[in-house]
Length: 133
Image (cartoon, rainbow, N blue to C red):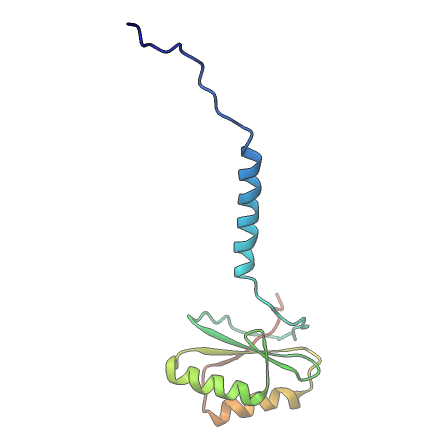
């Protein structure tokens, strides 16, 4: 009894390759949106000199020209910022605070955030400016 099968050439179905490529594209697009950072549109001020600060953990406070404050991209009042900074200082005191204000923001709006930082005696504070180089 001969049970040998006839040999056929090896065949790779290519019909589903376009479907797989399309699904990979969707996956990559969704993963890239996870790390998307929502920032208000600000015009950075210029500085004559500055220093680069590399820290482990940073907290960003954005202030637009109307005085609206954002804490890490979330609309926040000064009271919300004070509570968040107080909790952050207790859990991770090495966290650096970056104040990012629009070039045309009146200083009175920035002074409100600075007053909160002074009241909490927060020392690791940086003002973010556009690199002049």
